[in-house]
Image (tube, rainbow, N blue to C red; front, side, top):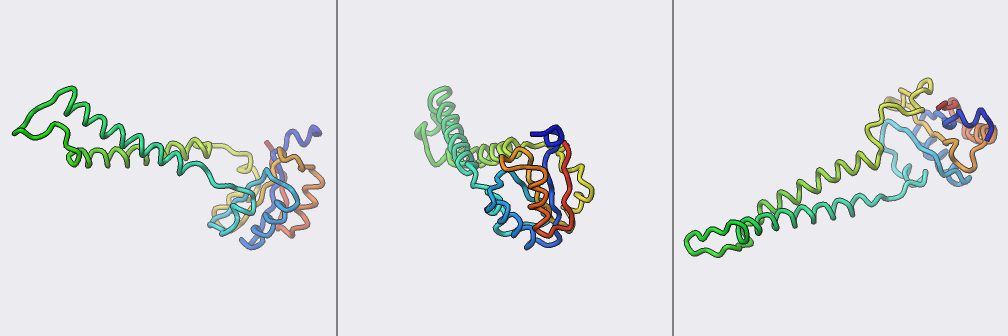
Length: 180
């Protein structure tokens, strides 16, 4: 890797339509590029698959956290009502499952929601006040009306000139260098 490539985060191509971005992403993935990202002001069906984004394990984490919340909710009530401070009220049983359901349900939802939220932040690397693509002139239009495909220099196939000519062949509005 040359000195100029080590200072480069990657190359970014700007497109005018979502169809052009989707086609460019498919071609880049088909050519063998794997370390890339796409930026769009709206969801584009099939774009995640086109850049090689796979499903996450977040639903499994949510299920585990919900199950933990249910166990904590039910266990806490059982411990208090039956073991730690049993109170015999009118001869009713100390352990009454239906009585424990509301708190168990609420803690299930609480653990799942808060845990998923924290998991999303950690998995997405948030908060991220700075990213190298913010330095590209015109990138602010990624939240308005432009579509961008960035191939990072960390990609094994990345070659500054070869990647630039490949992106240029996709008929973008502009190909920009993204500096670190």
